[in-house]
Amino acid sequence: MDAISSAQNKRVRYVKSLQTKARLRRSERKLVLEGDRLIADALSSGGRPSLALYSLEHADFQVIAALQEAKCELLPVSSEVLSFASDTQQPPGILAVFAIPKPPIPHPSARVLILDAVREPGNLGTIMRTAAAAGVKLAILAPGCVDPYNSKVLRAGMGAHFRLPVVEASWPEIANFCQDLTVYASSVESDCDYAAVDWQREWALILGNEARGVSQKARKVADKIIAIPMSDAAESINVASAAAVFLFEARRQRRRPSAS
Image (tube, rainbow, N blue to C red; front, side):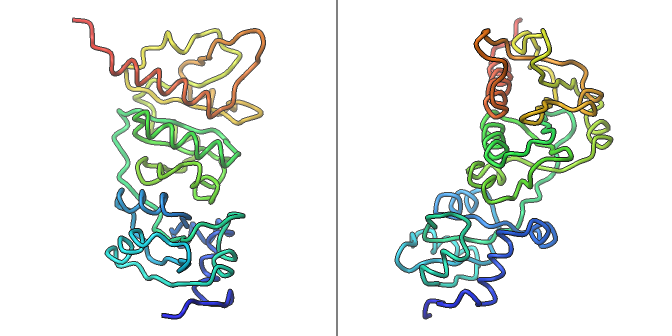
């Protein structure tokens, strides 16, 4: 098949629209992944691809073969067309459309991360990547969070979207879901040290907005406000950094042998 050389091609414009229009991503339940690593990771995690655009000059043909095996429609395109469809300044050799994962929601007696109006795509993606690595069972996005299927979130998440169930919910829904969990919220105003928390119990953790912290609605859901002690040289740390501190302390405690 000859490479598509027109950016006006119907499928090319569809991919471009998915990249730029959150409403279309939601209605179609589709997302776009760019690059061999993200695509290969999604495939290994059971992702369902439907369409891929690739450059004959740059594509990894092992990934092409894996997409073929997954019954994905493959379209060779010129480098110029790939640049048009891509959301990066230096496009990789391939991008692919996948169905947005819809994994089963775990039972509420699980480790739950709740994000309260996290707006920076890089932060949200990094937090999701960290949460998946730390053994979180569910991520809940409260109102005000950036679109989790934004291309920058997907790149920062490094495949976490296909390993960690993610749902969006209102605060009443969150309160109802977490009623049997101990809910912690992070705030620099608290004098309760996060390391003193018993993370071996079932919990939910709320992390707040980059500038404003946790909202009043989040505080109403929380059973306890906790903090990361810091030196006098700093007032706070980045929310993604805070997520790593909390979640890996929880993992460390879970891996600790129980006292007999």
